[in-house]
Image (cartoon, rainbow, N blue to C red):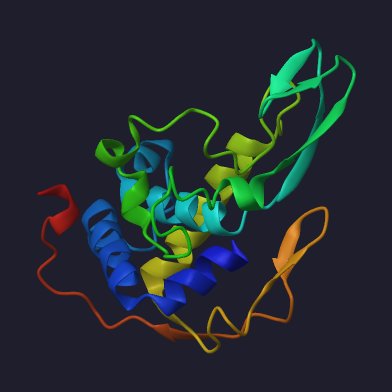
Length: 197
């Protein structure tokens, strides 16, 4: 969630689209709790969260033991070998994600991601031993982000070349992320956001 707020705070145009979507979904009732029905309508917020997880996956590396002999990049690898999946680099494959260092939530709009290989994006470890809390964590993040952004705007005080990822078991910022959070101005004329047109 830190990375998502950090990236939103660096991209006012993205934040503006999120505000449009939140205004459309919640209308004048910005204090009501988020419901399960709201999740399906928070499409752009989900794209933003996915794109931030592409750039800064919470689990940047994970291991899997091969259950059968296989060939990887032309090399035979025997059953029982432990393979490391470097998600941080996988998510920067230019063949799958053109301009991979650019923060572009539109990559995850349905029309832009239908032809993508299923394991090209793995923000949580995949397969039979994947993260059992993945769905809960994703819902929790959407609730918190939508609540913060319904009431506030965020501005990142440092750039991506200052806040670097620190690759450990999980990915965290190398130094504290500094954000300026300001109350949003009252909204008038709540209209259908452009992303739904």
